[in-house]
Image (cartoon, rainbow, N blue to C red; front, side):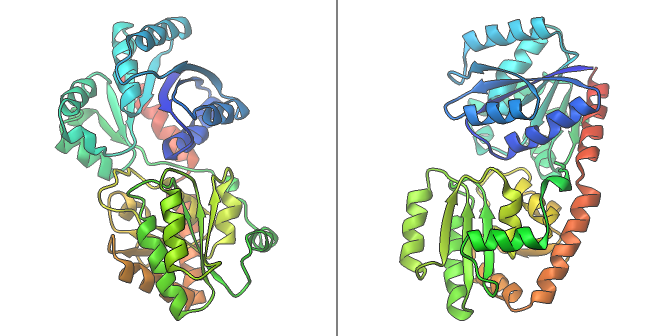
Length: 371
């Protein structure tokens, strides 16, 4: 089977990291895969990572939201590669890739990675509903996303399939020595309680709730630290917030972290204080934290309750509540045995329910249905 994947990219976020796991694994399963990156500024990092992973990759300038030149180039790529399936990701690729697949009479599959609020406004609602009828199957990455697709009529219900993200736990490095070295490199003492957050620094991720929560927890229990992995347009504002409400050395901004494994092992817990307005479809970093054996502090919004089992693999808290998040941090910091138990349970769940093998097999099943 030959499959052409298409996605617009401007860096490496959750959907890109998903593809960096999925595409090589599809190739190892016998699927002939090619990735066409619709490149926006910053896409070079993603293209380089794909090439390093051995994925056959081409790229075209993404251009504007509606780009006839790009459509012509994609149609040429489809006719040259002659795929059995065109698999698009995110709305820009859906718009151009699914139309071109229909023109070339190639079956289409579309993965929906979020519940973008733009779908609720015209003309995006009309475009989303029209494009959603072109692919033979739409993959929702969570039940939360699937419900959104049904509610907003963005795909015929009988064409929707849920395929959760999966990871290879072996890619999340472990070991006492690596944990000790990682903490030392980050300036974290053995007695410190390090809370990590790994995401783009953009509105809706909840950093402006997490920073004052950590400040409040650190005031009651010395040694509470916050490690912020990721970069984005909110960084300067968040750094100023941390400077104003936290004592020196409490918060460290690490910038983009290419290998999240060592970072997560250096932390005692990982926080995902996502706000309700963010259209997050899964929460891949929460799964990676579980695979690393770390308890997860997550907002009870969107798809996170599907990933984080409250009281078993982590703690779910009221979204946008500094008080609730600070209390959850303190509870874990004061109870190391509970922290360890949640981490062990999370690692077990990641290795049984969210495997890379399951994701690959279920994706191939969708391809077979679509042909």
